[in-house]
Image (cartoon, rainbow over all chains, first blue to last red; front, side, top):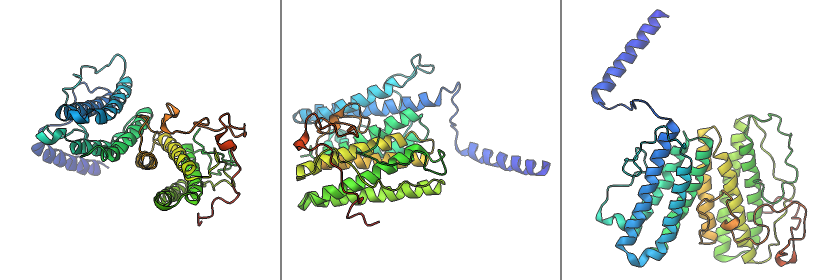
Length: 166
Length: 198
């Protein structure tokens, strides 16, 4: 018993040491906020990025504005639905609306000249849709359902944007 | 809520293992059973490219159905069999009716998967997420139009251009107010579907 505990702690210590030496940064959130809020904040940031990507695409190609606007509006609706799930008081509500880099996979690539093309939009939609299942794993039931629906919309966008091209 | 057309006898208490196997899983299976049936009808009323689309949809729903069956069995439940008969929400005579039915089916199956997406089991959530994306994408393939930003949420009936009956058609054939083609819910044939080689 003691021996096993010893072995166990030794192993743990070894692992910890190895881990610490290579990873300076740990997911240590000082006064860790509610995980759902953290998740939501990241999802909201990702959505905001998508919305603004559409804004950039329209700015770059005004001729496509009419075609792209419905897409942007649906993302705005998603954004609104996600924000509605944030706790009212926002216990951890000190997140700047759009400047927080989303820690999740839905972060779009850094802005580049091609970031405003329809193809870039498609890629972003594809990434967003394919990231939903993993995000749902730790989401509350209501958020999980919402994400499933949002992901379905994004998956449709991937196909629908194929008609906007060229 | 999620049933497609009529689910005559879904044995409310018939599952020996009882509740442990999530109801949402069972309802997803019921929705897929109905979808397989409906796609059999859809395939019977289409040709050419539409028939190919119908066949692909049929295969996809059958694969999901079998997957859900297996999952329920693995969890100690008894997967429900397809209903002996399904009531279609409107008569399917022409390809346009078939397309309309396909849209309705995809919408309802999506809704069933959204319900499953709230399950505690992350594996089921994942399945639900992927299946919902597939359904919504298939629906777009049938009718390239996006109405609702929240597929399957049923926030409005606008997902589908289905007149009157919109969401749930009441089981009683209340001779559809809009009388789609003058044929409210017909009783479909007792066999689950000719093509569904089970």
